[in-house]
Amino acid sequence: MLEERRETLGATIDELQERLENLESQYEELPFTDERIRVIVDEIAELRKMFSALETIDETADYSAKRALIEILNLRATLRITNEER
Image (cartoon, rainbow, N blue to C red; front, side, top):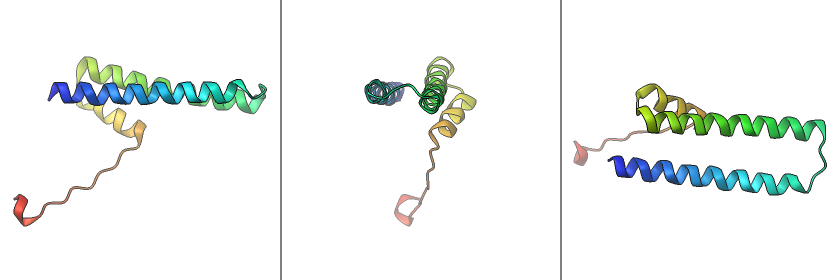
């Protein structure tokens, strides 16, 4: 179970790193305007929240850290139970 969680967290970190690199390359081509600076600051703040939540979950594995990550990523799930699964 821990290995699966480690793999999931590793994949999430890789995706965030790729997202960061893509954003950096996009913004290198544009001039710095006030709006661009605000967008960059907002994006960095969101990435910082995600990295912080991932780090907290990795260190403590507590419910509040997991819940914070779910809220940051805006994850939703629906559970369905059928007669065969009971």
